[in-house]
Amino acid sequence: MLAPERRTRLDVAVAAVIAIVVAVAVTAIWTRSDARGTTSVTANTPAPEAGTALSVPETLTEIWHADSPVTAAPVVAGGAVATADGGTVTGRDRLTGAELWRYQRDMPLCGAIGAWNTVVAVYRDQRGCSQVTQLDGATGERKAQRSSDADDAVTLSYDGTYVVSRGSERMEVWRSDLVRTLEFGRVDAPVNPGKQPRTGCELSSAAAGGTRISVLMRCPGEAGDRLSVLDAVPKDNQEPKETGSNLVGAADAPGTRLIAASGDRTALYLPASPLGGARIAVYDGTGGEVASYPVAGPVSADATAARNGGVFTWWTGTELIALSTSELAPRWTMSGASGPGAIMAGSLLVPVPGGIAVVDPTNGMEQRRIPVARDDETAPIATTVLGDVVLEQRGDQVFALR
Image 1 (tube, rainbow, N blue to C red):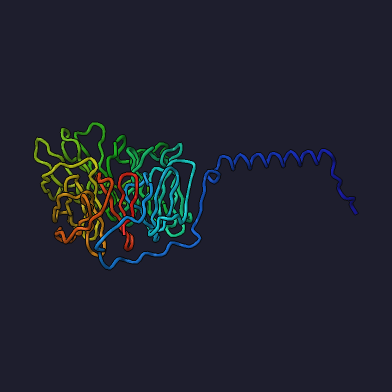
Image 2 (image 1 turned 90 degrees about the vertical axis):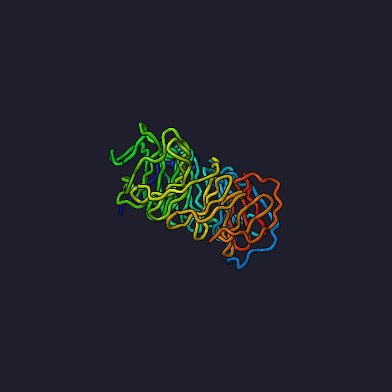
């Protein structure tokens, strides 16, 4: 029988050194990890679902408000209202504004948006707006996450299927599990160079419209803006597939902007130029112009559009123009609006000075007005409806009305 091994002083010393090295390594990893700078407090009970409102109320009174400077419009997901401030996304009870859940990181938020009944929060690190976390709207639990190169500032949009994250030089499209289906524009370290059809362009706006992504950009050496229509899910997400691309507008008439995209149609606003007056131009999937409609009034730099039932409502800064979701042709115009509005019980609620106009979305006829007391009437006012609660984003705050 072999004699049992005995530990020597050297063995003990080596073991102690190994333990210290492991402890130091673990501490270093923890110190530098994302987890160290993250606080996640989930809901004890999921937010209750908000049923669909059956009628528009006769009166509306503020029931709570909260700071949300990172969002452009009220964010709703899973029965909760999400606000975003600094590095914190907070899920709130729609009736009281009380905190249900909270997700916080030690880095600033670039943006937050509601999509797929979740909240998609984008944070900025040394690679730009690259850290993306998906939070369950009802509980705040973390779901999918992703990270990739990004610009220092991005604009988020959602069409019901895809989220588009657009920076000035680079754009990505994500599906519901945050897997990237398309990257377009700047690629810092391309694995296979030459796959991007446009390089060095400044991306001014983008919108998803089902299976297509429309991008408006200004490229070096070109006399005017360029509209490119892309496949939302090409075979290789790093190799965009253009179904069409054309120059639009005039070089001496800056201010072209993308209003809406739907199916194989894209609507652009083209400002007045020596060639003609301001107009809405509609393009097909090849990037060719198929229709044109004059625009009478001025268009604000804050002009914004929203899909509301069977129409896109485009707030120009002076009036509201409704476009059909199929052909993107104008249906009606309303003066005096303060934002694009939102659908409640089949009616379009349009913010106006001193109240909310209840409008028939099919013909633009105003049915009545609901008085609303606001300390700040500065437009635009972005509206969202969650059950029987009307939410308004006014500047850096979200207000709940009921």
